[in-house]
Image (cartoon, rainbow, N blue to C red; front, side, top):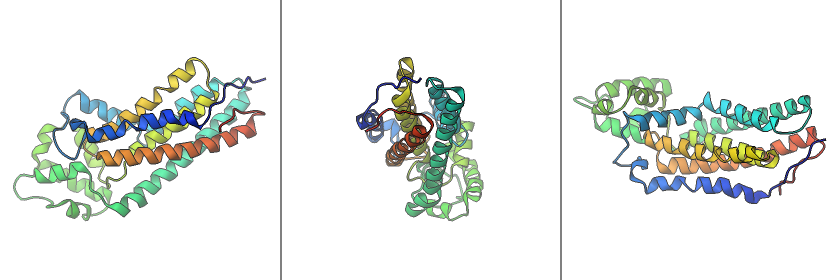
Length: 271
């Protein structure tokens, strides 16, 4: 009843790896290296684009990207409606479970093990006018939990000359993002999502749908770049976050294919 499309091997994951290979370019492209100036103008269209890409891989944007991608993929599979619904729900539940678990471990364990400050914190603290609210990044991170650090950073920004050079959206984003830096959670999430949708879709999608899948990879790269543009992560942060997200996504694909084999009498080979 359902024509099974051409299978692909693990070599197809090489396309995802190629996309990841663009991330180390942030070390050599001056404006993308948040460790030192020159930086992008954070009041113009570049900052707005960076915020948009960052939000698309955030806690609200990423589930939407996964849902839209999976709906488009499942609609392309020639199966009864009820079967397609089971495919959609199983893949969505698995992907959300894995991205939620990975993000929680990254935020509450991995980052706290390394305790690396975000690049923007150092920039803001060095530009305070008059008596500093906080004298060092170490003191800033010892000022309390994230909500308390957000309040401190808002006060620091009031006395910082940096406030004159960033948009209101960037300032709001900085105040909200006061956790540790390494590795990048957004890069992890984006490359997880891209790997999952791209590899799962390439197993089952056909024709134009396969071509459209390729756009998910540049999206993940741009999400990672947006984090250094906004000065909330370093090149090393996004490289490690993206790599872990890619590997976690590959594992999720294997799990999804096992589930889909249960719901469909046949499945493509994934070797």
